[in-house]
View 1: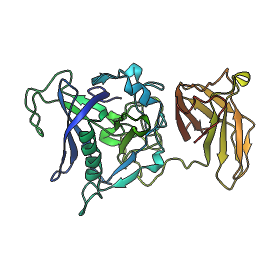
View 2: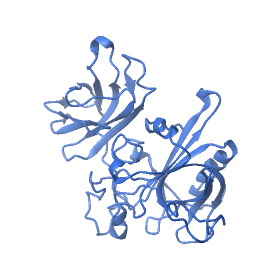
View 3: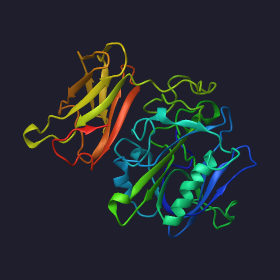
View 4: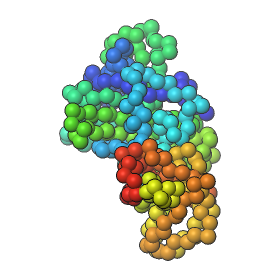
Amino acid sequence: MNLDQGYGVLKCQAIAGKIELGTDTPHYQVHVNDGKFSYRLAINVRSSQKPFDLLYLVENNFEHYITDKLNKLDFGFTKIAETDRKAGGIALDYIRANLFKVTDMKPLPFNLPGENNDLNELIDSYIQRAIETKAAIYVFGEPWGVEKPETKPDKIFGFEPGRGIHNIHMNQGNSGSFAKENGVYQDGALLIHFSSAIASQENWVGAFFAFQSQSFHTDDSTGNPIDKKVGTEPPDPNTPAVKARVKIVAALVNPLGEDSGKESVTLINSSTEQIDLSGWTLTNKLKQKQPLTQLKIEPNAFVTVPLDKEKIQLSNDGGIITILNPEGIKVDGVSYTKEDAKDQGWTIVF
């Protein structure tokens, strides 16, 4: 199952932002332009079902190998075909691409008395900064009016013809009537590149959104929740993602010449009990896998796992590392960039 109108990313610049109130399903609305056409970004700020408050996370210094790929895109809408929605591409997946720690997402009301304390105002602050600095915005989601423009003016900003992007949030783990929108590598988000003449002063901001009714345990091929059957009541929003007893803390991605091929990943057992990793698996962005066998970690101890280059290799151009439990559920994941891996022989610490 996938988004009805397809999926893709729009590279554009913001012209105006508008806070929307007085509706059951308010959105923060953004007028953007790609150099040829105007679009409207409709960003959900409140759910239509309980719990109403959205989960959000804003990474003010977003670092991920995907930004190198995005920099190369032309302004305009890039459709991402279903065959290209996979690991290693530009499509987003909150769970599989290790964009951030999903447990860092927190609920935030869309409208509260006072200044700079609700989701509308948070998004607005970044959009206004993007307008002032003419930053490049990359918005992932589902388009409307792109392949077939609307025949009427946009209902919010009045430009003609109407077109835009919505579903700018996680698009998997849905139950009930929203299950038809489930899929993998088709999540929505807002990435903003604040560039500068001084390289050290430029940065990326990543804004990610999800509904509390969505599950963070999803099937690898369908995006359906695996902790509850599709079509039933939404999963308990108080059920957290798997608590990471085992965490990835470091990796040797680019060994010295004489040690070429001797890549490794270092794990920590943060719990108070010994953990047997038999049946667990390490994976990379290409979904290469290395099973972990006859390996145990003592409480609060580290273990360095040598990687078998015949089974898994870590790219020097940036990538991800994920550890899965015997049920195939992601326990922890990290990402690194080409810049992180450039120094040969150095260990990357996460």
